[in-house]
Image 1: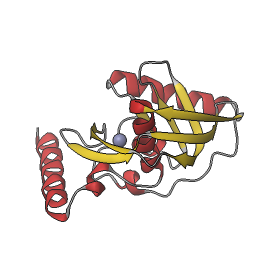
Image 2: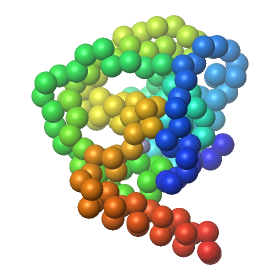
Image 3: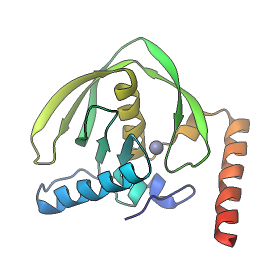
Length: 164
Ligand SMILES: [Zn+2]
């Protein structure tokens, strides 16, 4: 398992629901957590490691949590901007406006359903990761000119890396 960076097609793949909860699920989430911590991330979605599954992990400082098959049930009208980065878009940050508070329904590593209301950084990070499950990246929030520039610099950076 490794972090896939833009323009890897994995980042745009259609994800499917996790149907089976067993040792493989736990192993996958464990591997994802190791990668996330090794890269100082606060969240990681399955497509970022090449898996087309609706699973994400998150740790914004309150411990590791897994959200499998997450669905946003409710969101606040209040929105705020946050400068977000992404492990799959090295060197890029984007100011993204999102609801401040959300309620998410999801399953844990054992398949048990739970409902959680989140706010602040936790709410923003989960929304960022759920975007990944839908093939959406923070650069998609940019206007066309900034999008073009971001894509160009990401592709150039990747090319330079491969040439080394
Ligand atoms: Zn990301």
